[in-house]
Length: 61
Image (cartoon, rainbow, N blue to C red; front, side, top):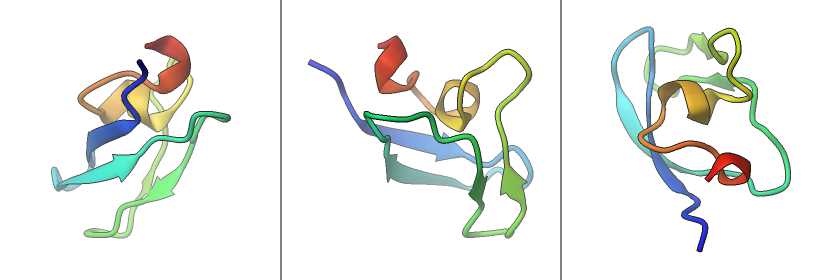
């Protein structure tokens, strides 16, 4: 079973928050609700969850 709940940590401010990961697409950008900076994946990663979450995105689980 795929777990779609992840804890994402902003690489800019270090704030962590729980998010639901989409199962039908890769999320490649998000504005941090704490600091407002744009979060994008590290080079070679498919999405922000693979770069900054406590588990990989659903397609890679």
